[in-house]
Amino acid sequence: MLGCTYGTLFKTTVAGGSYQEGLSINIQGVPPGYHFTEEEIYVELMLRKPGQGELTSPRREADVPIIFSGVNAADTMPGYKNAGYTNGTPMVILIPNVDRHFEHIEQYQLTNRTPRPGHASYASYQKYGSWDDSIGAGFFSGRYTSSIVAAGCIAKKILIDHGIEVVAFVREAAGIEMKDMPVEEIKRKAIAYREVRKQYDPIYLDLFASGKMKNDMRFFEKAAILADLEKRIPDIKRPVYNEQEIREKYSINPKLFCPDAAVADAMYAEILRIMQEGFRKYFYGYIAFEAGIIGLENGSHSTLGNLSFYFVTADFLISHNSPKTTNNCVPDRCEWKQAASCSPRKLCGFTGVDFSQSAIIHGYQCIKV
Image (tube, rainbow, N blue to C red; front, side):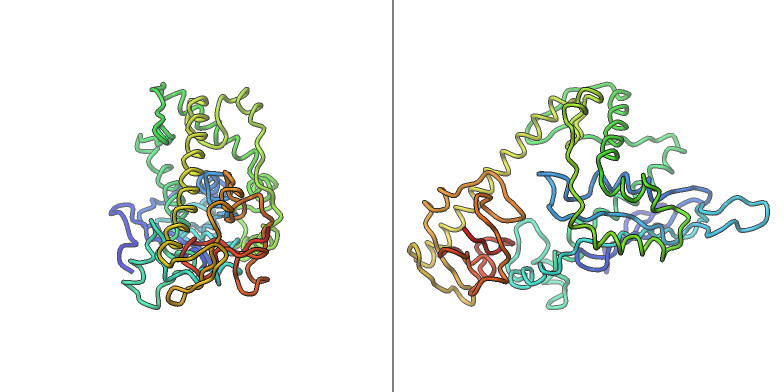
């Protein structure tokens, strides 16, 4: 596939997909003599990965990297201490998917030919036809950015030897901007932010802090650890931050890294407000729009092409209005269950929108009031 390779002296090629076995990054141009660990790469991926709070995807991917090639498997000659060091050949890092939710595949299959706003699904279908990987957006999923982050971790370490240090933070979000701050203070808080995330991250604690996953293990040993993790991932709790303690000790917001904690709080609150307002407008507006097109009345049922619709008035929706989503469903005042147990697949317990087959709401499944 063209367009997957970036760079000249430091060249990266990405591969994989959201519901494929995982992601990978092939890096050419890594100089010999560098030592990288999966733990240090994970610490960077930890800041990107989903399932960390209200501002991220609910998917619980662990994003644990495996260094697959480009480093010496052992000391190459007597007297040499170069095991685990880069040898100048292409470096490949794998990031297996461990939280794929195969029950969601049917959901994607039913809605894949309705392009999602802001996604590449339509362009992908035009380019690859019926062969395109549209399960979870496939290659064009945001998951592939994990491979770019892994490459960035490698590049950052090399750049330091050339007098270039990279520090990233959120300066502006949702129209709220941070004032200038001394670079050294920003760097200090960036280090603190990573340390806090490590202290609270369940995957880091389970695999790396415990010593369970070591850099010198063979590939199959690491794969066995991730196979076990895949079984346990649904039961691993999301981090619950002691925000007051973190603020007193580090003066940071643990969920969003703007070095000014007060500004970070304001950014976070405003982002949530925009998300909630936008969701409500989309939810109510789109249902009213579709209902108006096909002339539905409250409690009625109709079809549009091969799509089946059930309609409920805006009064009902407003009376069940919720400021947030729960497990990709709305509203959270309702008791939810999977569409597979409903026949026909519609809002169970009352006549409502057929979430699983219609184009009204993408990705939402059957509920029970």
